[in-house]
Image (cartoon, helix red, strand yellow):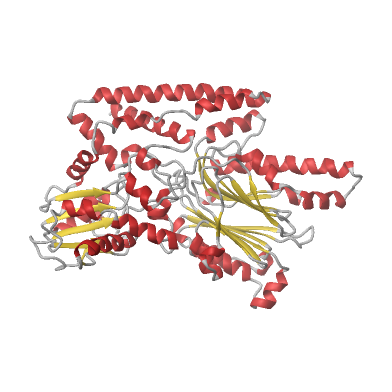
Length: 606
């Protein structure tokens, strides 16, 4: 209902046969690009602000281009960039990216892939990713302390420069090896191109990062790689046969593109990299030790395509597990209740919810009560009139329930800001005159920002947080806010002291850095304290009070998924920091403490 933006989708292809093989077998030189296009379109849900592609040709001679890139902005970016593809751009290595910004930065400059040029093929680096780094300030300090000067302060550019720097060092290492063996001229170049160890580059680059990521890249000499963060926060899947190696952010993308079973697709493990060498040989390398698994549960609830065989069942379980609290909310009156959902992402959870009721009570009444219309556009500039039009993005099925008699149970995948509920959904549902509206969320209350790739960065965006702050004000508990504020400041002061020391020791190569980083990992999320005095039900009631339109007639009750229910439904994706505040990395803890400080500073200045 309230669209959340996600930090990107990736697609990679390595053709393992000579290029003319695919033209002869499949009748087109564009076989690889056609597959890349399909992979990107099937992940369009992951990024609609921009898209980019890159390719590397391994056989082009010096003096001709061998590394190509195209980028475009907007929802039609995929179509636009592929319309520019010509036969001259064909290559054995292909990479694509779909972008959603979580930083607020827009423009073609910020669209992936990013390209670092050099006159040596092996030093050319093209990079894209599904990522958000939480400690980019530390990495920036590390780079500048070495004498580098990145042109732009942003995690994508800084990562490109850091990894490019490490790639340069790897090439120089091989140059020394080659000259020691007596090689000269182009024999040195061939030696370097044939012996690049991307695992060395990745280990010396990614060890500096805190965040959730799948980082993908190509080099001009023909290396291809994708590496996943050690906590497994962001997802990646790959497929290999004797013609092709492909990687994508979601499993069904590969199944559909290559007409294969789910068992043919493998998940990249936390801290692991898929590396494909110039000669087409591939391997899995453990780049960093795997940490406690924190795979993002929101991928399962909302972001990933529901066509994945496991996600489909998980979303059904999320709905089915809510039958008991819903039954309580409607006072057991199933016969006078109509069940529906907010289109389109909550549809599978709706099937699970109604299956649960059928198991207990036999048949239930289901209707498509809410319809989502095309996005309304208007030339009107007056804010009040624009808001009135925005309230009509959704419509209802008139006559779908008996006025004053039937309860309306309506499920959505999440309730985040509550804006759409207040300005649109509740108003139009009230026109049906239900006896009661039970608004159901298949996910728990979202209480904390995400810093690993979802555009939820400010505490005040969440209706659960605003409701909690309202309860604190009502009950005169501002000492709790002050105590939490001071605790957040104390945690950040300790973190800054440790960070400065770590940077200094890193410059000198001092081993004490690793000892200092252990306390950093024990940083405390002080913001959790503000929720402790209140029950979920108390916060629910306050949310209803805040979101309920003033002229609404029907009573409203909220039903949220429990944390226990979430983990029962999605047992292999335990990442739940947006619900519980248990961030998997120190960077997440640091940023949520800072977010609370920012909130208090801003509200006290008003």
